[in-house]
Length: 441
Ligand code: NAD
Image (cartoon, rainbow, N blue to C red; front, side, top):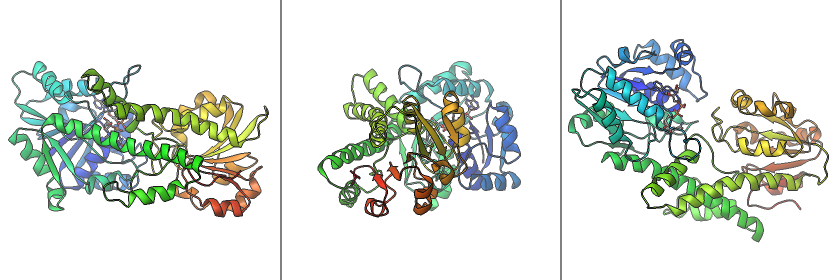
C-alpha cells in the first residue's frame, strides 16, 4: 500500500516514519522546502528520541520519501493523511483551520482516483464534514471518503506511542475507507491494540475530550498542591494515595508550573469555544483554562517571594525551558510566561536546557540582553541568587549538590517539578522550595 502524509511536523513525520516501519510506502509532503531538503538527507528538523535513526532506515529501505510536490505524492495513494498545524486562532481561541482547509483544497484539485482523506490533525467537531465539502466543491466528480483518525502520541516518546498506542480511534462510516485504514493499522491489530471505529464527529470529540480531561487532572492536582502548602500536607503522598485508586489512576497527577505544549493549551481553549458556539458550555474546562493561565503568575510570585526583598537586580538560574523533557518544543511552554515576568522585574537570567535552547532563543529574542544561555547546569548556576527547576530533564535529577552549593551565591533551590527530596536538601543546607510539600521557612 502507498499513502501520503501532508505536513512533516511532530505528528506527520512520526506517523509517516512509523507507517513506513510497518511496511507501507509513505511519501511525506511539506510546503516548507528547507525542511524537505533536510529530510531528504536524513537530517530531521526536530528533536524526538530515536526518530532520526528510524527516518534514515526507512529512507534507505526505500519505503519513506519526502516531496514538496503534492501531485506527484498522490499518485497511487490509497490514504492521504492531513497532519498540518491547527494553532489557536489569534484573538478568539478557536482552532485556526486555515492549513487544514488549504491542504483539503489542494488534495481536491490534484487527486484523480479513489482515496480516503484522513484528518490526523486535531480539529473541531464538524471539520471532517467541511473537508469533505471543500474537496467535493473543487472536484465534484471525484470518488473519495473523509475519515478522522486523531493522534494521541506524546512528544518525547512519540515513536513508542505510535507503535504501541493505548488505542486507535477511526471515525468513518464508509466500509471501503474502513478497510483501507484497517489494512494500514494491521500490525497494531496483531498486537491486540483496541481499534475503535466511530462516527467521524465522535472521533473528533474523543481527541478534545481526552486532552481536556488530562489538562483537568493536571490542574486539579496543581490546585490541591497549593492547598497542601497551606495545610501542611504533602502533595506527592496525596497523588500516590489517590492514584492507587483504580478509578482515578496515578498518571497526570504531578503538580508543576502549569501545563503547556503544542496541544493542551490550544485544545482546551478550542473545546471551550466550540461548546460556547453550541450553547452547551463546558464550565469545568473553562475553569481549567483560567486556572492554568493564573498558575504561571502564581509561580512567578512564588519565585519572587523567595528572593531578597530589595530593588537590586537579581541573577537567577533557570534549568529547563521546554514544556516537558525530551523535546525541543517550546510551544506554550510555561517558561514563555514566567521568564518575561522575571525579566520585567529586574532579574537577569542564566538558563540551560539540553535541547530547547535554539528554539528558546527565537522566542526570547526581545529579552536577549537579560538572558545568558549557558553550557550546563553548573555554568548556569554560577553567582546566582537562586536556582529554579522548570522542566524535569533527567540531567537535573541528580545534580552534584556540593558543587551547586559552591557555585551558587545563595543556596536556594525552587524545584517546580518536585524532583528532589525536601528533607535531604534542607539537611544539606539548602533553602528548598517545591510544589505542595514541606518548604523552607
Ligand atoms: P507542526 O506545526 O509541527 O507541523 C505542521 C507541518 O505542516 C509544518 O511542517 C508545516 O510546514 C506543514 N504544512 C502546513 N500546511 C501545509 C500544506 N498545505 N501542505 C504541506 N505541508 C503543510 O504540527 P504538529 O505538532 O505536528 O501538529 C499537527 C497536528 O497534530 C495539530 O493539529 C496538533 O494539534 C496535532 N497533534 C499534535 C501532537 C504533538 O504532540 N505535537 C500530538 C497529537 C496531535
